[in-house]
Length: 269
Image (tube, rainbow, N blue to C red; front, side, top):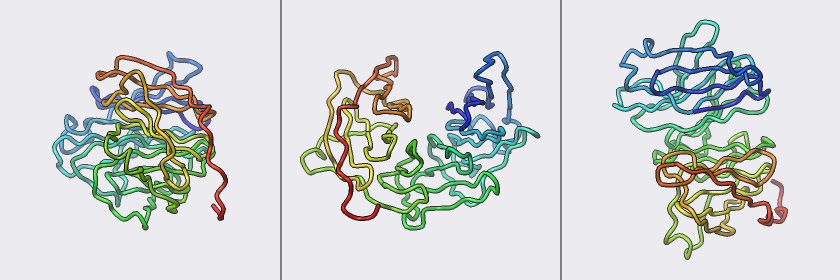
């Protein structure tokens, strides 16, 4: 996992091998602070490897873990840089499954999560979490969650939502395209939230980012990686960076700026 603070003053990296987080000053890359936490995990750090990370402007860190033996440990964890102590975020379901990224809002006040279908956000000031009540606890295998650059749209587990977790649509394929749809991890939302780019094994399906309606499929000359976050957007345009190859050994730039955006909705959005 790797993430930048909203003000771009801090870069945090999770180290699954050392059970630690590293905070780097992008303006001084040799300035690195290490935060080991393995000895604080009561059930054994070798089963609680860090994955997705987020960091606030003042250095508060949140990270998810890969729990490898389902022993009931915390899966969304807060690390205080002042003390180096970690604590699980209370109230979020636990289970033996992988977690992905945890996007942070531009003002640093919210960290969003998708705990295998339990979707919500954590208030970074109070530590309280808010769940998507209309989503319920889906209990199926999704863990992707994406926040648009303009902070208005959120995608998680097939749901199109606003940033306050109000459901606006649901990802839906046409009958013809559903036969051979096989998705990999790493969806991207266009900067204004109007389009969702869903990576497949060798294609990208494009959905209306507000209603979830299928719009088109773009075939690719190379396979997208099934093992890493396949697509990354810069939050400025619809030019994406992709990790390619069955082993994730390639990089591609995919320009989707020519894809037409959907017309304005005829009802309040």
